[in-house]
Image 1 (tube, rainbow, N blue to C red):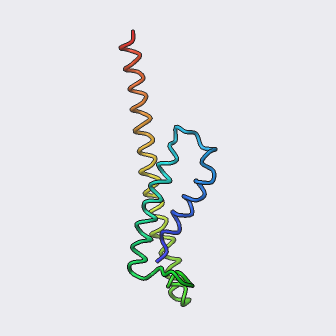
Image 2: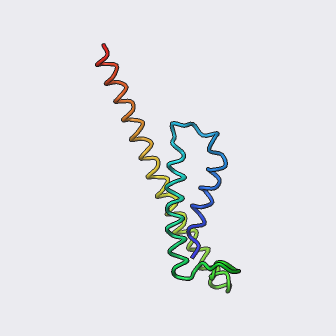
Image 3: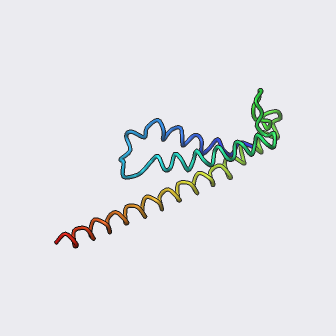
Length: 112
C-alpha cells in the first residue's frame, strides 16, 4: 500500500546531505538503489489502484482499519526493502574498495 514511503524517505534525507558524505562511499549508488525500488513499487501500487492521483492519494487512508494495515506494511515490507538496499550498497562499496586496493597493490608491484 505505501511500503515505498520508507525507502523514499531515506533517499530524500540522503539526497539532502550527500555532499557531506565521503566520495569513497558512493552514496549516489544507494540513492539509485532506493530510487529504483521506490519507482518500481510506486508504479505497481498505481497499477493496482492503491495509490491514486486524487486525495487521499493512498486508498488505505480511507478507513482506520486500512490505515493500520498500511502502517504495518510500511514497518515490515518498507523497512525490509530499505535494509536490503542498504546491504546491497554496503556489499558494492566493500567490493569496489577491495578491488581498488588490489589494483593499486598490483600497480605498485609492476612499477618496481
